[in-house]
Length: 117
Length: 102
Image (cartoon, rainbow over all chains, first blue to last red; front, top):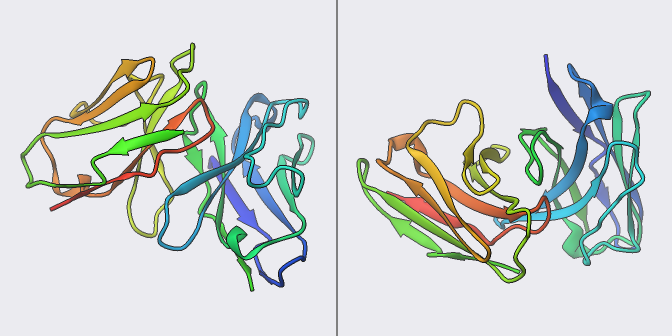
């Protein structure tokens, strides 16, 4: 079955760190751009970061630049998001997703919850 | 910056819905996507490349536009179409969303 499964969400204090993971299965992970998108409770979608197939290109949203790092391990079919210097406004449900089409993400996980408080 | 209008659209099943997305910085590749999100669910890709329906998306959903102005049209609303719709530019920023409610 083709799927993405996020993990690592937790309650963390402001200024703390957290590492999210996304396990991919059922497809050739190394063929795809991947993304992290978050959603604060009751709010809209916010793009966080993308990573290309070999990890050489990693654009970030201004709101997380310098604090978050996206990475991937193609051998392990895994995507990660290292989050440092966390703030209350980083609270939300974090989704990983796959880009099956240029500039669009057609497969999504169910998300992992991060609470900064 | 992406702007969506209206913020909320109140319609009845069977009616036509027209949602707008304005992009401040045009993407020369026209990589504009539309997503549907229902409560408690992950987003679902509807349209990519401004006008291409994703696999499995009913043909009552259509997208058009280029440059800075884009439109998502739902020709006849079905009960399951009442949701929030987001546009996204080139795999990056999202618009604030349009809620389509009964």
